[in-house]
Image 1 (cartoon, one colour):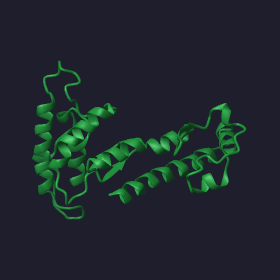
Image 2 (image 1 turned 60 degrees about the vertical axis):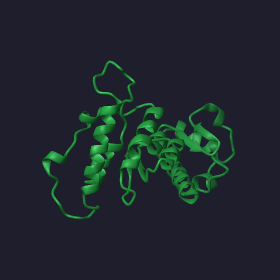
Image 3 (image 1 turned 180 degrees about the vertical axis):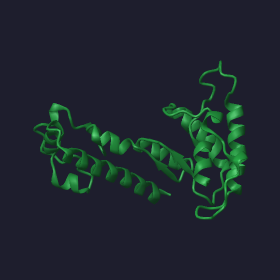
Image 4 (image 1 turned 90 degrees about the horizontal axis):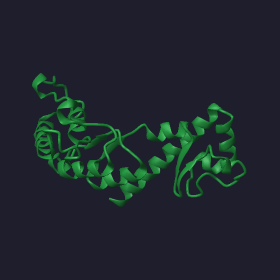
Length: 198
């Protein structure tokens, strides 16, 4: 239940991005602070207790949306995360790029999930210490360098950019597998750096 409520509590929202809407920042923040009080009352994960119907809040009540601008997400998290208890995990659902994950962690978010590393991998977009690489581009056809010289994953240790590009261009399923292994390793390494910096 903690995850269910906190994902709605922390998720996106509008900060008067559309002033014509009757519900603005103050109402959303007030509702989220009320939800924080409900989260605090919930048992920790694993404890058995039925959810009371009047405690369920639907996303439409909070004006949540996927794809909010990062500035809006950061402002909403900065405003609402402090209301959550520090002795419980803070979960932000469905975000983001490696850079965003670092920012959300700085604001006190403990856990995040996102389809981006795997979805991007399937479409040939790879995250590296040198920036994003679209392996489908022809310029990588003869590039014998490792995908990311700073990465120690098995893909970067064994395969060149040219080989990864060949697999992608040939529609080989192995391309999706190797790209996913690399992107997930990159995300794990990003979170490892975040943990060590705390």
